[in-house]
Amino acid sequence: MTNRFEEYLSRMLQTFDSIDLDVDYQRRVAVKPLYDYFQTLILEVAVRFCGQNRNSLKNCHLKTRWEIVKSSLRIIEDPTKWDNLVESIHNIRSKVEHNDYKIPKKEALLQIRQLAPSFKDWILRVGKQYHRESSGFSFIQKFLLTSDWYIKETDRMLDIYGEKPPYLIEGDVFMEEEHSYERMKSLKDYLESRIQEIDGINDLVSDDFDNLIDLIRIIEHLNAKEDVLLKYSICPKCGGRIIETERAVGGSLDDPMPSAIIYRGGCERCDYEVHSETIQL
Image (cartoon, rainbow, N blue to C red; front, side, top):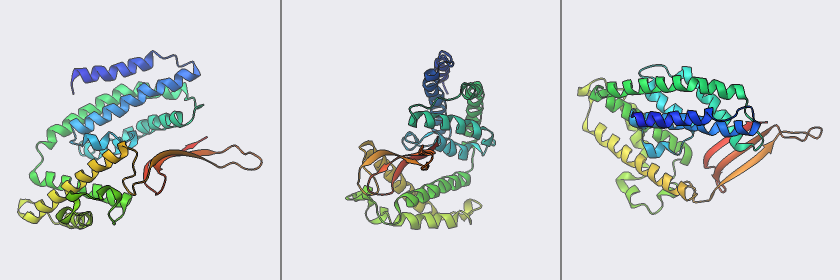
């Protein structure tokens, strides 16, 4: 990671430090540089040190980015000690973003600000160590880690779209025959069973490589098409329109004020969601 990048991060904290936290509205403004600090830092560590795909991650919110990078960093050191910190800034940002009158507490913001440099030092140190050691992983380790990643990606795709071909592959020549959507599950099932049987280089067979390569091609192709459709607010599952909605829940005859607001970004026709969050009032 270059000095230029670390200076970029420092300027975010300097912006936060310049804000008067004794003014209510200024505390809302102060959330932005703090959130950007963590969001940007985790993205760059995931991409530069852990080999994650930038295009796949850039549409993910903070908690998702953190969960993805943790899957690599935990090989070096337990990252869960930072879960509360990431959860805290994620929740504060969501409440401010979705509630025009939400004012975060000064103490909560200052606590995150105090821990931000330590988090940066930790994630850069562990990320760099992962990058160094991953280059020394055995071929078998790399094969198993890559297989496990794309098995999880397949599960995610099937959970979102189901086993029937979704809208995003309509008229797609690439997804015909050997790269068909239906074949994705059988490739995943094959690799899932094989990684339990592979202990050394002599356990590998040519089908292991062929099936992993085919699965990677399918998943990356689907991810790329998903990104394009979402840029135009088109649902990748059914072709409907992606919209933002909010719905108040709770309340009673005696006290009609809602107890929570559910915010959803997703398709107006089907159950496809880009994001969903419940904010307690």
